[in-house]
Length: 121
Image 1: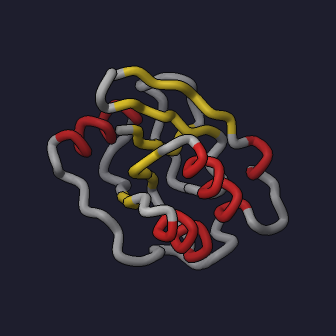
Image 2: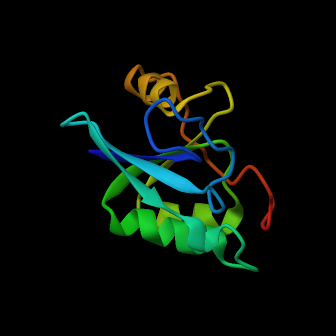
């Protein structure tokens, strides 16, 4: 199973980014093989609108089943929910690796709604 973690870095020691739609990158981590790839999200960093929707569509196309991020706005939340992707909001971890470990241990709670307004920067 693949999960997406928002980040500004390029490895598992990179910091967790608090934004979903405007995160600079996503680490796509495969829980079955313990491998990962980094997907650039630069096209959505300065988007006037639709960054969350486009980011959600992009991760859905990658076969992701869960997203770990700091915050997720309403439009992105709806797209991820429609794609049956679970959303986990956390600010309690500092790195991608810590987020993955928290997910593995079942210590993250899936979100039931967006936790920020749209166009949150």
